[in-house]
Length: 485
Ligand code: FAD
Image (cartoon, rainbow, N blue to C red; front, top):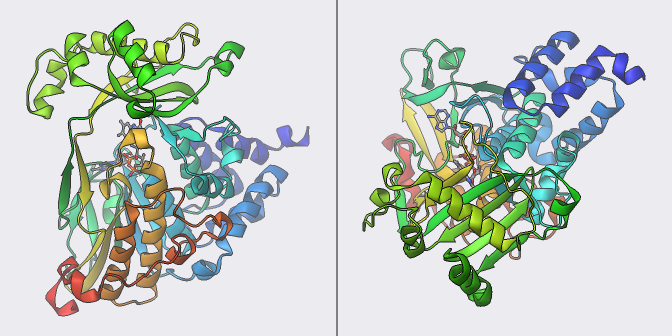
């Protein structure tokens, strides 16, 4: 009873339970106003919030955050207390990196051009990511977190959890702000970002660390990208409304069936309904989510793709796709693969209110050649690091995006820690590249199983690693100013 009448408790509850990005930001501002704590006072914000919110539900969360923050790697928030970081992108990897940098004591600002978190699509989680998110209080923010048989979370729910933790730790998150490019130092002004709208106060923020987490295909100047071209791979995702009925609850999830393992199923799918797939995954989450790789021949036959082209961009150009036929194709695949057991399949809606079905090209995947670089202009150094999809694009049906994305976020935080402690640029860049070399080979089996001891220190996560497999002389090209060598 007392809880419901105490306004700060009610405001805290609304913040914790907020289901959109906007609602989260508004409830956070109201909570701060009510408690008279200033989020811009990032160094003391969390401790003041904690002191002023003496509420059992909040205390549960403080306990978790305190436990993480007490790790010696962060040196009680002093490791990077003089550093300032701009994070481009409030996707899961940008936010996860921002949280670690805030724990290190960095002043962190995150920019995102979007104003809402609208992706229904569902991400597969490796056991370590589940433990990581539970340790950050995921269950407090989202009670259903990992309650099913296969572990996953929708992209938007994951963003909401991470946004809330980031705000609590004093990270400034600006939505509706587009990053246009880096502005070099001039006069006494340091590195800044050119943003749109130009009048936004993020334009005045000066920083010495820039994290690019702008998602697939976003690459800042100075980085080179490798294209990994495989055989034609056309991905389709579809989301259907989950009404959480008993009947829906009984339908089995599909953790990933590839053609080679279940020829019979794929042959029946092809011969009975003309849908020809390489693989399919089904997760029951906030929506019924399906991701599949479809063969071109069947998409042409079913009229989903109107005309055949050798060039995949032309092939999948919106003008060459019949959206209604694509909906039918995805519907039939979903209905057949769940044995017609999902009643009244109705498409969930995407951000624009359309049926949430999309087709993507996985033929050519991008991967950055280097994970980080250092620029120096007018005596001011800037550390630039890529994380998430802008570092390595994941193949969605394999579900590696978040697990590898978070590993890179931690490795990057470790590098920023060394940067804050005055490490030599070439040495920390070489160490970061040594970790990056491992990333694409990581699996749930070959990383350390001792999840409780995971920290930003790479040696807690990768067994038997050599942190110096790449030598400083091999990364000279990533320092963009000759006299730093
Ligand atoms: P993202 O989550 O892509 O976040 C990048 C953020 O940067 C975005 O919020 C974007 O608005 C922002 N941004 C980009 N450019 C700018 C700029 N110039 N200024 C300001 N902000 C900017 N993975 C799967 O495993 N399965 C799926 O089904 C799946 N579906 C997806 C659907 C879509 C539409 C997209 C875009 C991605 C999908 N992914 C999927 C990939 C998955 O979302 C990522 O692997 C995961 O979210 C980690 O990505 P990230 O944080 O690196 O980048």
